[in-house]
Amino acid sequence: MIPWRSGRRGTVSVWMGALQGLSPGVQFMHLELDSADLELLRRVLERHLGNLRMEISNTENFDWRRSLHADEDRLKALLAKLL
Image: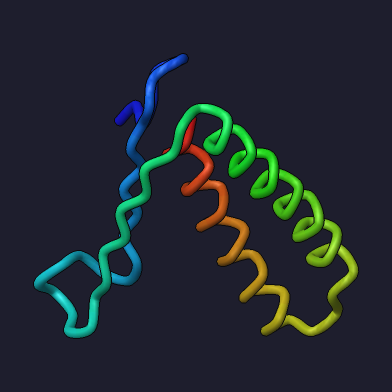
């Protein structure tokens, strides 16, 4: 999915939770972002990804590290959707 085209208003759809119909309480969020807002969102998420990687490398607790790795994987997937 290409959420936007240069110079045009774009749409980004984000699922929160499991797929609709498979789990109760699933929420769907629909964001409309212009190219400047989308670029800002990308930069913020990429910056957080860098900080998250530093936190992972400094974490000694195995369970917490595993949780951070799961967050890292989800963040990478989200960034891939925004490209």
